[in-house]
Image (cartoon, rainbow, N blue to C red; front, side, top):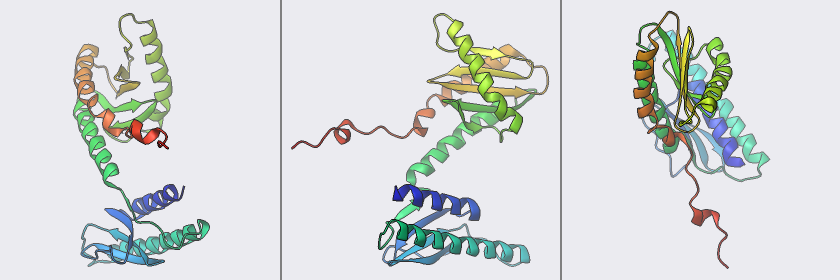
Length: 234
C-alpha cells in the first residue's frame, strides 16, 4: 500500500536525523517555526521535519546539520519517486510518529522503567519482557547472546507450563537467568552474572508482571469494530 511505503520512508528519516517528527504536508497545512525545516516534494506538498532546537556554533553541530539536510534531500527524492510509481499527482498528508505511535512509545517507556527498577536486584544485569516470542521492552539493550537465548528459554517455560496443573503459567530458574510467564503469551526473563535468591526474584518479578499486564494491551493494534468489518447493508 502507498501509505505503508510512505510510513517506512518517514520512519527511516526519523532514525537517520533524530527528528522529533516528520510529515508530508500541503502548503496550506505547513507550520514553519523554530526547529522545523521543509523540502518541496511536488504537487504542492512538502516534506517537513521538526527538531528539538539546538545551537550550531561549532564544527560538530555544523556537520550534523549538513548530514540532516542531506538526509532530507534523499528522502524527498524517494518520496517523489514513490509518487511516480503509484501514479498520484500529490502525496497524502502523513506524520510519523503519529499519535498512536507516540502513545505506544510512552507505554513502552513505562514498561522499561519497571524493568530498570527490577534490574537493580543484586546480580541482575538485564531484564526483558517478551510477547508472542518477541522482546517488546528491556531494562537495557539486549546483547546478541541474550537475544539468542530467548527462543530456547521461552520453549522451556512453555514446556514447564504444560507440565503444571491448575495454571497456564510457570517460571524456571537457572544459574544465570530467571523466566516467568504471565498474561497472554508474555514472559519476563532476567539475566544474572552471579548467584541470586530465586524466591526474592520470583516475588519481585510477580510485582512487575502484575503492572505490565495492564500495559501490554495498549501495545496491540485495536481490533476493528464489528460494524466496520461487516458488509455494508444494501
